[in-house]
Image 1 (cartoon, rainbow, N blue to C red):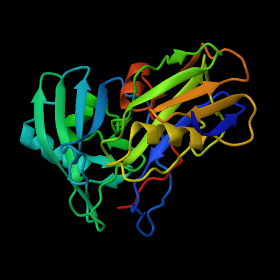
Image 2 (image 1 turned 90 degrees about the horizontal axis):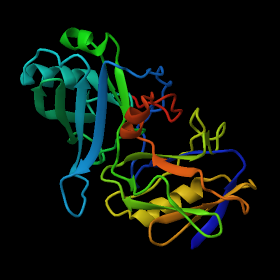
Image 3 (image 1 turned 90 degrees about the vertical axis):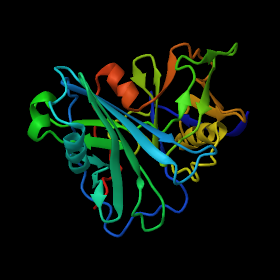
Length: 293
């Protein structure tokens, strides 16, 4: 195992936010927090960051999105849905039609109770880079979409592609538990990791997120490895605690120990839209600010 051990007293929520080198906020980008959007039972959204190139590239970034409606999709054509989504979807508070953040909605398909679409790279970025920032994807409820959305917006967290192979981890003979990152990011954006011991989230009440999350900045998503993400998670754990120790390995693993006690009930999840859909959970208040347009 390599890397300095990091410890934290409280039971934990770790959010690892991934922002590559050279991505700087424009002047005035840090603005007031958005209102928390509750879970919407009328429409479920899944947004997955992907990359069309191998090896991954800056220009290969895109997001595939699906909207699954409980009572059937709006009765609109693909062309009308494209126009609607282009004007009613935001990422981290940014319009997709911003002069410096223009991301085209394409590949729209309306079928049964599902609408799928793709969000392309930022083609007007002043530094040539695309970012999902804090990962919050918001869709407003207006026009033909309003009734099918329960007259309420929907919000999710974009998955970047980072994956933990087994949230239950592997229990070691000394009582510690090891988790393995099996896939690195496809996009530039925040990666949120939820670590729990039983029903308690670690690092509750601390960090830069209202629910105890932490933010770290990773660089060059297109070259990061699972081992890099494991190290980032360990580095995000605050110094000075005595209960939990996090240690990263060179193979993409990180190990959690608890002062000689068994970590049988410790679990680690990627906290993204797929996770939120499974628990019917809202994104909540992420204090990493929304972006300006």
